Image (cartoon, rainbow, N blue to C red):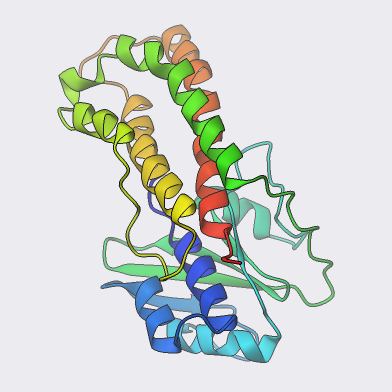
Length: 245
């Protein structure tokens, strides 16, 4: 839950399309040390390097991409393209433009495979009603507070010694690395906090080794932590989709 290649693609591609970073900076920001390839790109056969896909965005008429984090029962922001929703739901993320949608699939730690869905003849979804970054930050803080008792009851630190440091780090400003220069500092702070909460949430949703957790207990845990997961999704989306004025 705490790796968002579609977010990196959306933020860096938008920064390049709007002239805030160079092509090479955008490509490095998206790929890092990982190999990326894209299939389904209009005008191409088979899989192509991500650099070729990025360069083709201008030719397609793209001006901005947004991160969308679909979840079961909530596919807002996804265009009505045949076959897109199941793939995006499986990935949990997509980079959505006006002409194309790209969905990532990690193939091990060193390769990311992207599937492109052209939006020819498909009306793009209306732009999301994006709340303010401060509102997303406040909602995340409130969800953390409301979930604190549940997190304590799960006794995560017993099985995952990294949890106390992650939770303690929430009180310290620590911007998320790897975003373009000039990105909104509030967005950087929100994303750094949301990614740490996402890591804790991933651990919390995994049954402790040898723990006798029955279905009823797991259902109560999941219900208690669901609002925290929603707040993390909204905070991550707002942070990646923030565009500097």
